[in-house]
Amino acid sequence: IQPLKEEDVLHGAVLTFKDLNLVHELENNLLRSMKFGVITNLASSISHEIKNPLSAMALHAEILEGRIKKLDMEGKSQVLQSVQTLQSESARLSRIIEQFLTLARPTKPELNLIDMNKIIAEVIILVRQQAQENNINLSSELDSGIGIIYGDEDQLKQVVLNILLNAFAALTNGGDVEVKSRAEYEKVIISIRDTGIGISESIQKKIFDLYFTTKKDGGGVGLAICKNIVTAHDGKLFYETNEGKGTTFFISLPTKDPTTIRSTRIKPIRKS
Image 1 (cartoon, one colour):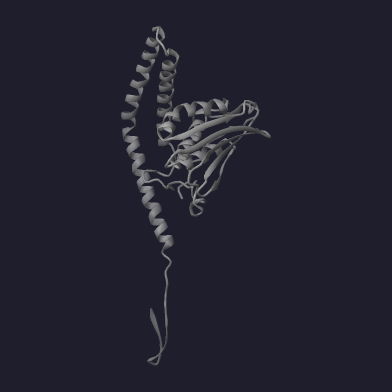
Image 2 (cartoon, one colour):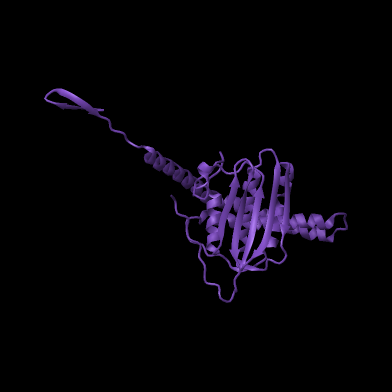
C-alpha cells in the first residue's frame, strides 16, 4: 500500500496486487522436473541390477517350460500358458525399462502387422487376477472383423495395459470394466469403460500432461506416454467421462496398407 499525497495532504492510496499463481506453478513444475530427473537417474543407475534378475527369470522359465513339456500331469496346458506368459512379460519388462530411460528422446517404433484383439486378450490375461482380487468384473467384447493394423506391438500393449490399470484405480470399491473393439471406416476403435468415479471437470484438461497425476505414488507419465505412442501411430486417444458414473477411454488407430506406410518416429515428450 502506497499513500497518494500532495503537499502533505493525503488524497488516497495505491494498492498493488501480485498474482503469484504463475510463480507457484513454475515452482511446482521445477519440483516435478527434479523429482522426475532423480527417478530417471536412479533408474539408469540400477537398470543393470533389474536386468540381471530378469534374465535369470527368463532363463529359468525356459528351463521350466522344457521340463513341464516332458511331464504327464493334470492341467499341463494351463501351467505351460502361465510359464509362457512369464517369459513374454519378463522380456517386455526389460524393453519397458529401456523405453523409460529414453523417454525424452525420439524412439522409432518397430512396425509390424498387428491384431489388436490379440493384444487386448493378452493384457486381459495379465490383469484378470488383479481384477478378481479387487472385486472388479472385467469383460470384453471384441469384433473379429476389425482387421489388421500396422504398428509397434509392445508400445500398443503398453497403452492398453496402462489405461486398464487406470480404470481399475478408479474403482475403489469394485465395479465393472469393459473392453471393446470395433471396426470403423478405415479405423480400429478400442474402448475401455469403467464404472468408477469419473474425471473431475477441474482436471480434465490436464490428464494427458506430463507429470500430472492424482495418485500419491504416481509419476504422472503414464497417460502422457500413452498419448505420445498413439499419436505416433497416427491415431487418437480421447475419453468421455461422467462424474460419479465412470469414464470411457477410446483408442482410435488407422488401418493402413503396409506397402505405403511412412517411416514413423515418436517425438520426445515435451516437459511443460
